[in-house]
Image 1 (cartoon, rainbow, N blue to C red):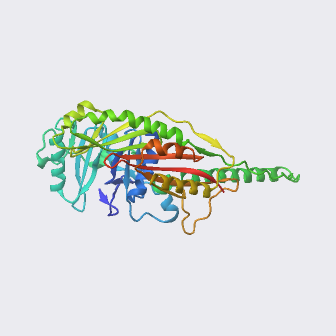
Image 2 (cartoon, rainbow, N blue to C red; image 1 turned 180 degrees about the horizontal axis):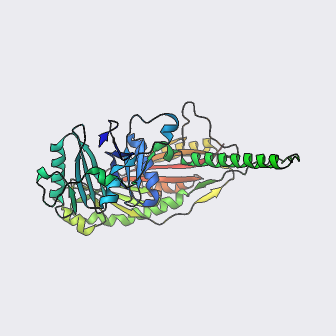
Length: 410
């Protein structure tokens, strides 16, 4: 196994395929939102590739330097090495393999999926052995397969050529971040290109089969693109109702909720912090669905919520200036902060992708305040064609942070 490119992510060439190791893995809130969660996390952390493992409900972030330019870069899709090993070896697997440059790969796949730091590249054998020893000490009965060097003397372990674990398994291909970020535009371009090609083929067939002149077809203006959104009032009702019901989770002794995050009214995520004499066993027994951090000092509980309907409209929307004026008034009266900006900034040299039949502009907004929700929730819901993407409450200072999007007239 030889390294191709040094960097945050290690690329290995085995059997004519390129495998990526060293990804940071995270469990998603729901399988249906893995793509959106992966895109947001990659943008926040500066990753340029994402691996989505739907079978485990996880996504991994990768930073791959030196991606080929041009068409080669478009088609450059390494595979996740740890996902390929999981497909061949199965869950509950520990492994450590040396690289040619003296570094080591450390793989940890438990029964629920790949550990957050279960896809590591460490500097030397000592670090690899220390990591393996710590994992076995934490969960001595959790590992059914251990592929480790014989000289380490680990019980019930064996050796295997890592090429055997990688060969034959297609694994999970990494997706470039720009594909996730511009998936709608890419699909639209492909559809338009396919229509153009079909029209050209039909035209060529007609010209070749008959000398008759082609009839002139009058141009028909395209239908207006509809705007789609979930009304903010429905999302806020679902989120605030879930927050009220979540107050019962304050009863876990020694575990303090530090943040509540409601995402589009689809899920509520509660972050806990262990304080004082808080017992890990209490969290496991009272909230078995919560995921504990590696050090046992924090836990996260994700609660799925019922799906919400979406509205569609091609009608006229309120102008941007009206939204801005109402937002400023809301900020002044409730001592908050409201911002409004274009949903996506056009990059230098990038052409304007606004469709000629698009009658609206997509805008992002944020609002934060320490006022009670009963005061501002109704005011936000009445702004118009507006939706709520995230609603975050910090109990320590009662600070609400809300983000969303809205539609305004062109």
